Image (cartoon, rainbow, N blue to C red; front, top):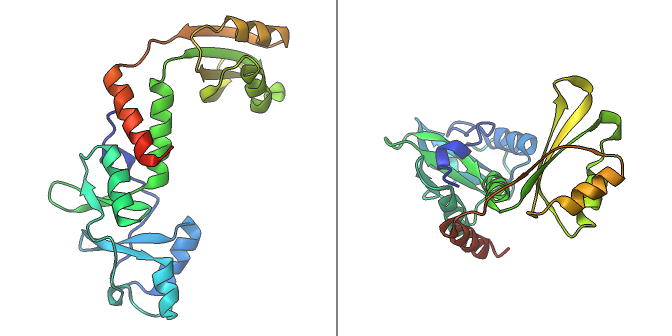
Amino acid sequence: MNMIAEELINHMIPPLKPKDDAHKALVWMEELRSNELPVVNNEKFIGFITEEMVMEQNDVEMLIEDFDTIGKNCVLSKNSHFYDVLKIASENFLQMVGVEDDEKNYLGVITVRDTINSFAQSVAIQIPGSILVLSLQQIDYSLSQISRLIEENNAKILSSNVEVDDDDASKLRVTLKIDKLDLSPIVATFERFGFKVIGRFQESTMENQEKDRINMLLKFLDI
Protein backbone atom coordinates (compact mmCIF):
# COMPACT_ATOMS: atom_id res chain seq x y z
CA MET A 1 0.00 0.00 0.00
CA ASN A 2 2.59 2.53 -1.10
CA MET A 3 0.48 4.56 -3.50
CA ILE A 4 1.50 8.18 -3.81
CA ALA A 5 -0.66 11.20 -4.54
CA GLU A 6 0.37 11.49 -8.19
CA GLU A 7 -1.04 8.04 -8.90
CA LEU A 8 -4.48 9.00 -7.56
CA ILE A 9 -5.06 12.18 -9.58
CA ASN A 10 -8.50 12.28 -11.18
CA HIS A 11 -7.79 13.69 -14.64
CA MET A 12 -11.50 13.93 -15.44
CA ILE A 13 -11.87 16.96 -13.15
CA PRO A 14 -10.77 20.17 -14.89
CA PRO A 15 -9.70 23.30 -13.03
CA LEU A 16 -11.53 26.60 -13.32
CA LYS A 17 -9.61 29.72 -14.32
CA PRO A 18 -10.00 33.16 -12.71
CA LYS A 19 -11.69 34.58 -15.83
CA ASP A 20 -14.29 31.79 -15.98
CA ASP A 21 -17.74 32.76 -14.78
CA ALA A 22 -19.99 31.25 -12.11
CA HIS A 23 -22.30 29.75 -14.74
CA LYS A 24 -19.46 27.65 -16.11
CA ALA A 25 -18.64 26.51 -12.59
CA LEU A 26 -22.23 25.38 -11.98
CA VAL A 27 -22.42 23.55 -15.33
CA TRP A 28 -19.19 21.68 -14.66
CA MET A 29 -20.25 20.82 -11.12
CA GLU A 30 -23.52 19.41 -12.41
CA GLU A 31 -21.79 17.37 -15.12
CA LEU A 32 -19.21 16.02 -12.67
CA ARG A 33 -21.72 15.62 -9.84
CA SER A 34 -19.37 17.51 -7.58
CA ASN A 35 -20.02 20.34 -5.14
CA GLU A 36 -16.56 21.84 -5.52
CA LEU A 37 -13.91 22.49 -8.15
CA PRO A 38 -10.26 23.59 -8.09
CA VAL A 39 -9.22 27.02 -9.29
CA VAL A 40 -5.87 27.40 -11.06
CA ASN A 41 -4.08 30.46 -12.40
CA ASN A 42 -0.99 30.11 -14.60
CA GLU A 43 -0.47 26.52 -13.43
CA LYS A 44 -0.64 27.58 -9.77
CA PHE A 45 -3.30 26.19 -7.44
CA ILE A 46 -5.18 28.98 -5.69
CA GLY A 47 -7.96 27.13 -3.92
CA PHE A 48 -11.46 25.72 -4.39
CA ILE A 49 -14.85 27.16 -5.20
CA THR A 50 -18.03 25.42 -4.04
CA GLU A 51 -21.57 25.27 -5.32
CA GLU A 52 -22.75 26.87 -2.08
CA MET A 53 -20.47 29.87 -2.63
CA VAL A 54 -21.88 30.40 -6.13
CA MET A 55 -25.49 30.02 -5.05
CA GLU A 56 -25.04 32.50 -2.23
CA GLN A 57 -23.95 35.19 -4.69
CA ASN A 58 -26.86 34.45 -7.02
CA ASP A 59 -24.98 35.92 -9.98
CA VAL A 60 -24.00 33.46 -12.71
CA GLU A 61 -22.04 36.15 -14.56
CA MET A 62 -19.73 36.77 -11.61
CA LEU A 63 -16.13 35.84 -12.41
CA ILE A 64 -14.31 33.19 -10.43
CA GLU A 65 -11.59 35.68 -9.57
CA ASP A 66 -14.16 37.70 -7.64
CA PHE A 67 -14.83 34.84 -5.25
CA ASP A 68 -12.75 34.30 -2.13
CA THR A 69 -11.61 30.73 -2.76
CA ILE A 70 -11.31 28.30 0.13
CA GLY A 71 -8.87 25.49 0.89
CA LYS A 72 -5.85 27.43 -0.32
CA ASN A 73 -3.69 25.11 1.79
CA CYS A 74 -5.57 21.98 0.78
CA VAL A 75 -2.77 20.88 -1.52
CA LEU A 76 0.09 18.44 -1.25
CA SER A 77 3.14 17.18 -3.09
CA LYS A 78 2.85 14.59 -5.84
CA ASN A 79 4.99 12.24 -3.73
CA SER A 80 2.81 12.44 -0.62
CA HIS A 81 1.40 9.17 0.72
CA PHE A 82 -2.25 8.63 -0.02
CA TYR A 83 -3.02 8.56 3.71
CA ASP A 84 -2.15 12.28 3.71
CA VAL A 85 -4.94 12.97 1.21
CA LEU A 86 -7.61 12.00 3.72
CA LYS A 87 -5.90 13.89 6.51
CA ILE A 88 -5.60 17.21 4.68
CA ALA A 89 -9.09 16.91 3.16
CA SER A 90 -10.55 16.33 6.60
CA GLU A 91 -8.68 19.29 8.06
CA ASN A 92 -10.09 21.57 5.34
CA PHE A 93 -13.61 20.03 5.31
CA LEU A 94 -13.32 19.39 1.57
CA GLN A 95 -13.80 16.39 -0.70
CA MET A 96 -10.83 17.20 -2.95
CA VAL A 97 -7.14 17.86 -2.52
CA GLY A 98 -4.88 19.65 -4.99
CA VAL A 99 -1.60 18.08 -6.13
CA GLU A 100 1.58 19.98 -7.09
CA ASP A 101 4.87 18.94 -8.61
CA ASP A 102 8.27 19.78 -7.18
CA GLU A 103 8.12 23.27 -8.76
CA LYS A 104 4.71 23.96 -7.16
CA ASN A 105 2.94 23.64 -10.50
CA TYR A 106 -0.59 22.27 -10.45
CA LEU A 107 -0.96 18.65 -11.55
CA GLY A 108 -4.59 17.90 -10.71
CA VAL A 109 -6.87 16.94 -7.86
CA ILE A 110 -7.56 13.82 -5.87
CA THR A 111 -11.04 13.15 -4.53
CA VAL A 112 -11.69 11.62 -1.16
CA ARG A 113 -13.98 9.08 -2.84
CA ASP A 114 -11.23 7.90 -5.20
CA THR A 115 -8.78 7.69 -2.30
CA ILE A 116 -11.10 5.60 -0.16
CA ASN A 117 -11.86 3.32 -3.12
CA SER A 118 -8.14 2.82 -3.72
CA PHE A 119 -7.66 2.16 -0.03
CA ALA A 120 -10.46 -0.41 -0.02
CA GLN A 121 -8.97 -2.20 -3.01
CA SER A 122 -5.53 -2.20 -1.38
CA VAL A 123 -6.95 -3.59 1.84
CA ALA A 124 -8.70 -6.31 -0.12
CA ILE A 125 -5.35 -7.26 -1.65
CA GLN A 126 -3.48 -7.12 1.66
CA ILE A 127 -5.95 -8.90 3.94
CA PRO A 128 -5.11 -12.61 4.27
CA GLY A 129 -7.42 -14.92 2.43
CA SER A 130 -7.67 -17.09 -0.65
CA ILE A 131 -8.35 -16.75 -4.35
CA LEU A 132 -11.12 -18.74 -6.02
CA VAL A 133 -11.59 -18.81 -9.80
CA LEU A 134 -14.88 -19.87 -11.36
CA SER A 135 -15.84 -20.54 -14.97
CA LEU A 136 -19.47 -20.17 -16.01
CA GLN A 137 -21.71 -19.24 -18.89
CA GLN A 138 -22.33 -15.50 -19.19
CA ILE A 139 -26.07 -16.07 -19.04
CA ASP A 140 -25.66 -17.81 -15.66
CA TYR A 141 -23.61 -15.07 -14.01
CA SER A 142 -25.11 -13.59 -10.85
CA LEU A 143 -22.82 -11.95 -8.32
CA SER A 144 -25.65 -11.88 -5.77
CA GLN A 145 -26.02 -15.67 -5.98
CA ILE A 146 -22.26 -16.17 -5.78
CA SER A 147 -22.10 -13.87 -2.73
CA ARG A 148 -24.97 -15.71 -1.07
CA LEU A 149 -23.26 -19.10 -1.45
CA ILE A 150 -20.04 -17.71 0.00
CA GLU A 151 -21.79 -16.00 2.90
CA GLU A 152 -23.61 -19.24 3.72
CA ASN A 153 -20.15 -20.58 4.54
CA ASN A 154 -19.48 -17.68 6.94
CA ALA A 155 -17.14 -15.99 4.48
CA LYS A 156 -17.09 -12.72 2.56
CA ILE A 157 -15.91 -11.52 -0.84
CA LEU A 158 -13.09 -8.98 -0.42
CA SER A 159 -12.78 -8.23 -4.13
CA SER A 160 -13.92 -9.65 -7.45
CA ASN A 161 -12.93 -9.49 -11.08
CA VAL A 162 -15.00 -10.65 -14.05
CA GLU A 163 -13.61 -11.12 -17.54
CA VAL A 164 -14.59 -12.94 -20.71
CA ASP A 165 -12.89 -16.30 -21.11
CA ASP A 166 -10.19 -16.06 -23.79
CA ASP A 167 -10.99 -19.57 -25.01
CA ASP A 168 -14.79 -19.21 -25.11
CA ALA A 169 -16.52 -15.83 -25.51
CA SER A 170 -19.76 -17.26 -24.15
CA LYS A 171 -18.13 -17.90 -20.77
CA LEU A 172 -16.89 -15.72 -17.95
CA ARG A 173 -13.92 -16.19 -15.69
CA VAL A 174 -14.78 -14.90 -12.21
CA THR A 175 -11.87 -14.36 -9.81
CA LEU A 176 -12.82 -13.87 -6.15
CA LYS A 177 -10.73 -12.83 -3.15
CA ILE A 178 -12.32 -14.45 -0.08
CA ASP A 179 -11.49 -13.83 3.58
CA LYS A 180 -10.94 -17.52 4.36
CA LEU A 181 -7.80 -19.59 4.06
CA ASP A 182 -9.64 -22.92 3.85
CA LEU A 183 -11.82 -22.91 0.74
CA SER A 184 -12.87 -26.57 0.90
CA PRO A 185 -16.42 -25.95 2.21
CA ILE A 186 -16.98 -23.12 -0.28
CA VAL A 187 -15.68 -25.18 -3.20
CA ALA A 188 -17.99 -28.03 -2.18
CA THR A 189 -20.94 -25.64 -2.11
CA PHE A 190 -20.18 -24.23 -5.54
CA GLU A 191 -19.77 -27.67 -7.06
CA ARG A 192 -23.03 -28.78 -5.47
CA PHE A 193 -24.78 -25.91 -7.27
CA GLY A 194 -23.16 -26.74 -10.61
CA PHE A 195 -20.38 -24.14 -10.65
CA LYS A 196 -17.06 -25.10 -12.24
CA VAL A 197 -14.08 -24.25 -10.01
CA ILE A 198 -10.96 -23.89 -12.17
CA GLY A 199 -8.55 -22.48 -9.62
CA ARG A 200 -7.94 -21.95 -5.92
CA PHE A 201 -4.96 -20.34 -4.22
CA GLN A 202 -4.13 -19.54 -0.62
CA GLU A 203 -2.43 -16.23 0.18
CA SER A 204 -0.06 -15.47 3.02
CA THR A 205 -0.89 -12.98 5.74
CA MET A 206 0.30 -9.40 5.50
CA GLU A 207 3.04 -8.03 7.66
CA ASN A 208 2.23 -6.64 11.09
CA GLN A 209 3.48 -3.18 10.11
CA GLU A 210 0.97 -2.97 7.28
CA LYS A 211 -1.81 -4.19 9.56
CA ASP A 212 -1.00 -1.40 12.00
CA ARG A 213 -1.14 1.22 9.24
CA ILE A 214 -4.51 -0.05 8.04
CA ASN A 215 -5.89 -0.08 11.59
CA MET A 216 -4.71 3.50 12.09
CA LEU A 217 -6.42 4.65 8.92
CA LEU A 218 -9.64 2.83 9.77
CA LYS A 219 -9.59 4.57 13.14
CA PHE A 220 -9.04 7.91 11.41
CA LEU A 221 -11.99 7.25 9.10
CA ASP A 222 -14.04 6.03 12.06
CA ILE A 223 -14.93 2.84 10.20
